[in-house]
Image (tube, rainbow over all chains, first blue to last red; front, side, top):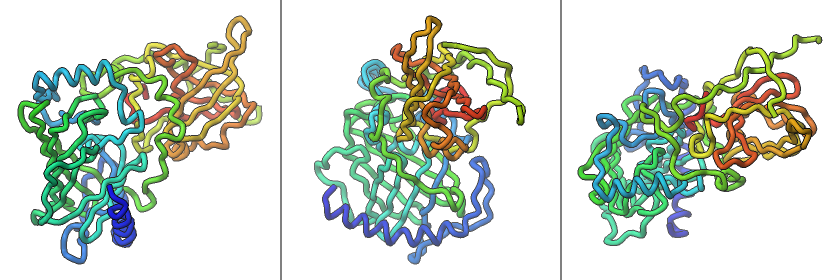
Length: 282
Length: 131
């Protein structure tokens, strides 16, 4: 990203911050499982939906962190090259995110981490824990570059389709990337089309089309809904590389994947029983 | 290093905290190797992406070894009531967790019994680890 783009981005952040304030001041805050909302979709001065807000995942997103969530048995349509790439990820790579490498898209959409959106008139910024962000122009006249420099978020172009914000991305890196927390792969041929909607004040939804002819035999989709955070919830500083002691202790791959499609052990050993606290005054 | 057994009481769970999963529990820790450490607090790193605190622990032979304990990110811990000021150098604390797969003296600190007897969760929520 050029210095000019960064400067433009900072200006957009400031402008959009005003929008964010107006959008969240009246937010009531829902529990993560509350899908009931009677408040209408907030809109910008141009009449388009305003996605600004702090967005949190819900327990209904199962299995979390798995890009195959919406497929039967969470079975991804891997090509032979994709199968080989998955095996490589599982047996020879440490989770890039744990090494403080940007997770990129679509991984961030499958993450359990909340994120924050600031929306301006012609740009929208998605800001993530780890202090990463992506800044996307909203301009239907822009076309993809002939040979974009590969990046973790890709070359992202935004446009409106009615009340739906469409983000079309190409130009991804093909190394040091996992497409999700389970070490599934993507190649540099990845093409992602996100369709974002805000059906009411308290929810945003994405329907993601994922194409990668090198690693997947067909396109597949990933859909998800987030709920608006409470007014006092926002991103905090989170320096991934400040003290990443664990990078020297991590094994390859995510570890075992449970039958429910999430990473982790099925039957962990119990911890020693808690120590009873002495009664007050003794 | 497991120096005492105790009767079950309560565990402070990590409920309500945002999911801050920097890495998979299962990529680093062995869920079959639960462990209890009781020792003297020698160093605290209240840092991202994880907190670390270090204990001098006597083994059965009386030899003192330093163990590292990995906790959740500062923001996640403080939101559940586990604050930097709860850990003071020289405190005797008890940490229950799981050993690193690589055999190093590093554990995932799922449950911490502070010097004042309070029990707090040190876990990184959303990492797929035992809750």
